[in-house]
Image 1 (tube, one colour):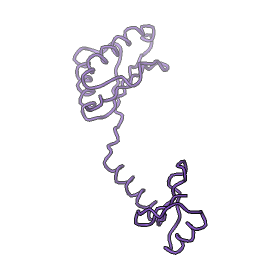
Image 2 (spheres, one colour):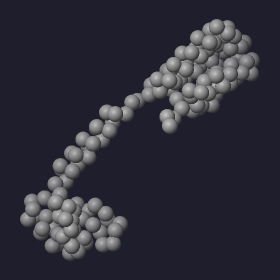
Image 3 (cartoon, helix red, strand yellow):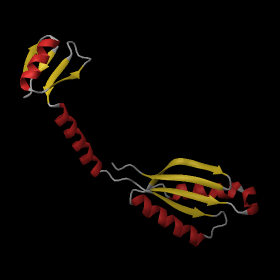
Image 4 (spheres, one colour):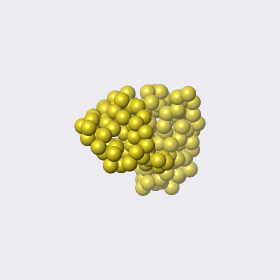
Length: 156
């Protein structure tokens, strides 16, 4: 195996037993870092410190990520134009804040017989939010609720 020392210097190719002896002399761990290489590469390091540093980097990276929330907007198939515009503005502001938008269109009573009207409203909603968002989940009917999920457009 190829051995790398604790300071990152090459110690050469040697047997596993010899590498273990050197690691014990340094009072550190022998860690295989590239098992697929020929010969395999091992490194002498403090494995617990290595794991701690990696977890610390992951926590730091997680801190800078923003988890987008899912905002919900509720509509009905017989929505008035002004009400539609208000809901549309809300959805656009949510998408601009990098949140996902779940649009639920509720059918009451016999309205369920006119699925085409609900679908037209959701298609119009998709077209009107095209600049800020993209469809993540196409409109689907679940019981008496037609659901659509919009996600913010990727930056860049």
